[in-house]
Image 1 (cartoon, rainbow, N blue to C red):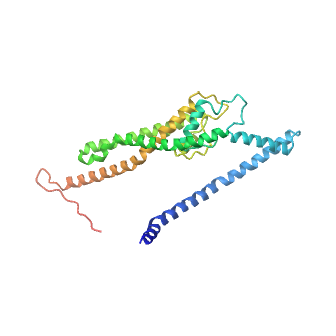
Image 2 (cartoon, rainbow, N blue to C red):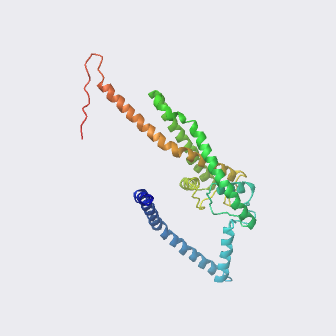
Image 3 (cartoon, helix red, strand yellow):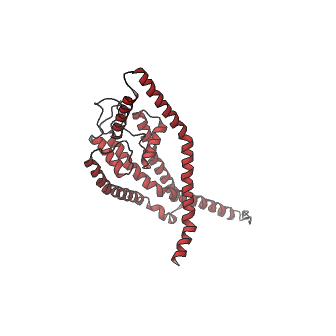
Amino acid sequence: MPCSGFCGCWGGRVLPLLLAYISYLLLGAAVFQLLEKQAEAQSRDQFQLEKLRFLENYTCLDQQALEQFVQVIMEAWVKGVNPKGNSTNPSNWDFGSSFFFAGTVVTTIGYGNLAPSTEAGQIFCVFYALVGIPLNVIFLNHLGTGLRAHLGTLERWEDQPRRSQLLQVLGLTLFLILGTLAVLIFPPMVFSHVEGWSFGEGFYFAFITLSTIGFGDYVVGTDPNKHYISIYRSLAALWILVGLAWLALILPLGPLLLRRCSQLWLLSRGLGLKDRASPDPAGLSRPQKIPISA
């Protein structure tokens, strides 16, 4: 009956997966709480202490006036205005920054540090995302398919000589390593140099970006004390598109490479056993390996 089949599928597959999923979320919550809660409390206490020191130094202000000023700063930050610096800071909506924002919309990264503040901009963003997100998915799928087509010979490699199989695996491994360096290693080094981050912070930004998590705690081109080239954020947006396409390529190629390597290892092991069992030139048979039964 359909009901019994549904119950069997739920109990056999869905329920264990659901339990594993919830357990993973609970584990993450416990670890993040352990690592971050104390640091948050220290930052909160430090902020309150700094406010008290500010009031002590500027006695003409009272607590209410300071809280109102902090509220103004928070509203400006929500609207994408960096409270550091002055009115000469670069605009968040010049063409390069707007191109970067458009890329974060269609890729669903959404850093959260910048968003449309006008009603017209918010409405346009909704319809822009409705068209841009599926377009981005289609583009990445076709790009990944096109790149994998050049590596389609791996699917027919059983008919090729062993030397050719080995060269294909080595070439694919080199291709993946160089691509990973170009997408996940060198860009964080550039971002770290330009933004004044450590390499760990740059790599963290790159991973959070390309995984489309996009916390917004690290965003390129937002420091008002730095002078960026005009196309810096546009280049960062292009890197995001290339990086997402690269991930769309290597996700299916990674398991394929591991499978081919294991097959090559088994094949070389089988050939080694055959060589041991074949007769030597003197006509004497070589000792065979006696299998040990379980």
